[in-house]
Image (cartoon, rainbow, N blue to C red):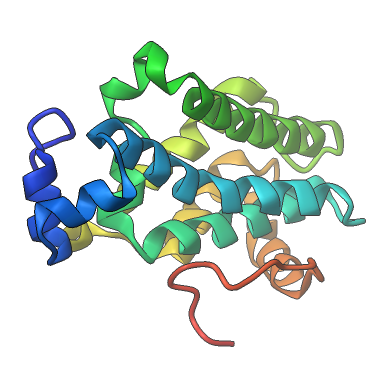
Length: 192
C-alpha cells in the first residue's frame, strides 16, 4: 500500500484491471475517485445510524448494531474503504463535503455513546473521545492481510465502553435481534 499521494490513476487502473482511459470515463480526477470512495464508505453507516434513531431500544444496543453493521460494510472492501478515511489529503479544501460526512459519522457515534451513558449502560467517559476511539477501531480493517473479524472489533469496543462489561453477550444478542429496516445488505455481511 503506497498511499493516496503516491498512487497514480495508472496504478488505480492497473489494480482495477482496466486501462487508464477507462478510469477517466467515470472520474475526471484522482480526487474524484477519493471522494467517491469516501461516499461509498460512509453513506451506508450514516444511513444505518439514521434508521436506528427511530428504533425503540437502549442506546448501547443500537451502538452495537450500528458498529457491527458498519464494520461488515467496511470489511467487504477493507483495502479500499477503511484506509482512505484517514488519508491526510481529505484535509484539503476540495474535500469539504467528505469531511462533513466524517463529521456526521462522528456525531452519530457521539450521540449513541452519550445516550448510553445517560441510560447508565456506558461508563463515565467523554463521549467525543469514546466515539473517536470506536471509529479508530475501523483501522483494524485497513489491510486485508491483518484484518480482524468485525464481531471481535465490536465486542472489544463494547467491553471498553460498558459500565458492566459482563453484560456484553446479552447486549450482543439484543443487537442481533434488533429489527432495523435495512436498505440492503452491507458489504461482506455473512449469511444469516
